[in-house]
Amino acid sequence: MSATAKSAQKRPRLPEWFRVQLPTAGAYFATRNLIKDLNLPTVCESARCPNHWECWSKGTATFMIAGERCTRACGFCAVDTRKPMALEVDEPARVAEATRRMQLKHVVITAVARDDLDDGGADHFRQVIDCVREVNPKIIIEVLVPDFQGDDKAIGTVLSARPDIFNHNLETVRRLTPAVRSVATYDRSLSVLGKVKERAAQLHTKSGLMLGLGETEEELHEAMRDLRDVGCDILTLGQYLQPTGKHLPVAEFIHPDKFTEYQQTAEALGFTHVASAPLVRSSYHADDFSPEGLASPV
Image 1 (cartoon, rainbow, N blue to C red):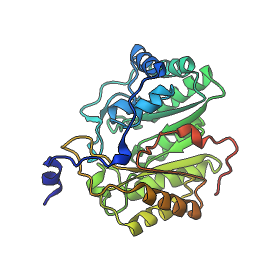
Image 2: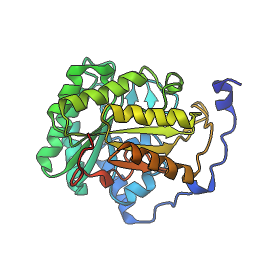
Image 3: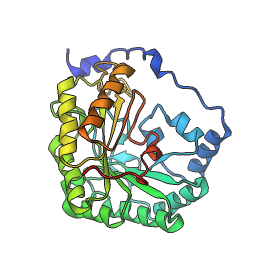
């Protein structure tokens, strides 16, 4: 049966370990209202993250800049694929104001892929980082970036703003990449992380993998080794969840005990910090990975 046919089937019931407590704290609604007031998209909503109830209740969010329309159509992602709108010149200031109002000590800034722009949106990242740091000089800034089609100049533009953590997700194993990702390639993503380490050896790099798409254990181990070979410091492992019936189906629900085993494997490979559990996402509990006190293993 083809992937398309499978995806049209009724999605399977989630295992019991995916039960999420709905928000009751006022902080959740305060975060929601602030984001709405400043007209700021979040990957929490756009990507249908299962953790946004918890994160917003804790007063944290991951800001998605450069619009809500992506130029790519990845098989796993719920973000809208359409012709993007023009960049909003006041967005950097609005993101900075949000970090001030929320009194954030750690912020994650991500973006849709903007292949329509000459620099892939790299200078917009730089402007947002600069504005946030001007408002909150002590904040830890983590960026979760697209691959910029591997463009050296674009990568350098982001690095010029001196983020504290540079995150780019590998997403899946080599064999599954063509079916899971649009435009992006396995080797290009590895090269992006490698180029960052070559230019800024002390900068902490981070990547994430989704499990349950049909990868084998050996393929997962290979991906971990490939990430370490390019100096990746921090790794997140989480369960893939099918956002809609049009997206790739879940091949397997990985038991939490297996995630614990994979975490131990990753730590043995030398990752500085590993988050591995079914509900883990790239930005989930990102402040647990604070660079303060962490020494790069590279």
